[in-house]
Image (cartoon, rainbow, N blue to C red; front, side, top):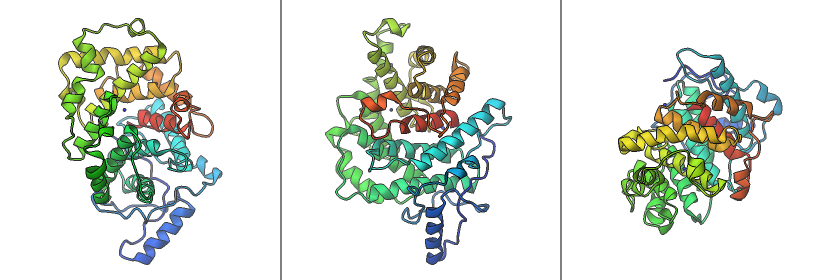
Length: 372
């Protein structure tokens, strides 16, 4: 609502990993991370990704960063057997964007719970491609802040379907990165699994939530295969859908919503990049996606609509469509769109949705598009 292969990332600038055998040393690590979450003195030991880490013993991400540090931050290197100039540039964009995310973390305070889910998913994606202990530690430290903040919410209640998606995404990322999630699973069983809000009239949310529940080992009330049958991809192919799309809808908003539904169905079909989506698609449905993704790029690249273009690039990579028309031009556009502070400008749709931060979604989805 994935690949998501790789050469070594640049060593992350993180705090010194102190001995796990001494509680006092863990506390010293917390204090150091709180003062400077991107300072490192060369992490060389590999951490077991299945080892549980107490999220209370992690950095304080809300501590303002020294703006002078952003010039030297180098958190990520795009893995590749032979690096092109375009990849080098994308790395610079990603590192600058990650600095922005660290300085503007999603939180409950600014109404950013949905972005907390997006941010957790991004750290999971980056973790999957990590080739060093330092890279993995960075992802775990950033995710620990989200886990800790969610646990700190007293009398937490889900308000709508999108928050269910965010909660499930955080749980999945935390589980995959080795955090203890027993309390999260209790909440899922008690408040989410059979809740009507998990399966709203908006079929896209049903598809996303059913996919995440499946990934977490549950049998959703509406199985994913059933919800997919009601989705846009299957519906369009059943109706012998013919492009061009622009002549098929009454308004630009209808077209935009159509493409957001398409991208989110691909996210769900692929478990956000963990699985091959073609395993759940008929050949005619795969053919439909092969045609519609480049059409979306050709429609939105002239309009410079960043967030949907980023999602289309993510989907093209998930589907293995890097040879489609407009792919590289769109990647170049994403890089060109970054502003001096590391963000990508205001995303108008975030205003329409009433999000607390109009920039954050664009940054998160841009990093996903470039790094996956």
